[in-house]
Figure 1 (cartoon, one colour):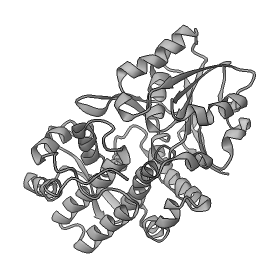
Figure 2 (figure 1 turned 120 degrees about the vertical axis):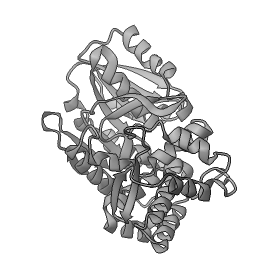
Figure 3 (figure 1 turned 60 degrees about the vertical axis):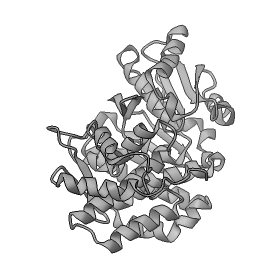
Figure 4 (figure 1 turned 45 degrees about the vertical axis):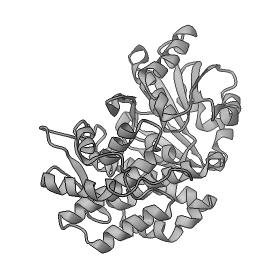
Length: 367
């Protein structure tokens, strides 16, 4: 097991990465201050891992809320299922919520914890690669709105993150690839050596070699933890973690939540960001092709959906949370391993970058 720390003063918390961690109650129990625990999971994950978590919590009053599985359920209506259970079981302010599942479960359980009785503790137990390397770390919680992804939410840090790599054995191939998009993101935005490593080891990751996966998760979390510690509320450099996300969120919203997985949309978004970077003269064709090849090698889409027009793209991107003063702010690449946030570009360059992608026939998502 490897343990990292997100350094946030009194609110610092550990990230544990390794095999068999769900069978180690000593990793969970110290972070539960009361006797009431609500485990939030979904219909897919609960049959696999709920019993292991319950065993680790013997002696406590445990209840559970099962959410429907899928991004399309990440909304206020589904969120009320958690509140209904908490109130129905008379949970008080000393309770702890445990998010057992992927990014949707983690975001929703975290938001419920942030808002129930004005804030209670929660623990992240992510069971997908994407959640282990990204959404479980950093305290971003929330739900989607029909007009924009993650537009309703709060910053609320977990008490700890337990990333048991054994849970990845039950992940389907498409979800694994979606998680690799966020792994690749860390290399592109600030860790060029990690990008080199990913190029050499991508097939091993797809083959689920335990040591390689553990290393990729640990290094991704280490990169994110450093950025979150320096900029918890995204006032500055934390915005770099949104590389590919402004474009990706537009794809998710425009196509309908759940049609493209988050990682698939982000992967394509990173390629459009690289295309924009090339048009600004920051990277060349060789770097653009290298990025496309790495993303393609991970089994991810490299083109945006043809049905999403440039005008619709820009309309959706105009609602992005990073925007300021009516300008769409983008995370772009100065080079592989160095990203910047900027709104200093010509609108025609953005349109040209989008035109280059949506004009290509929409790829099939049947993996």
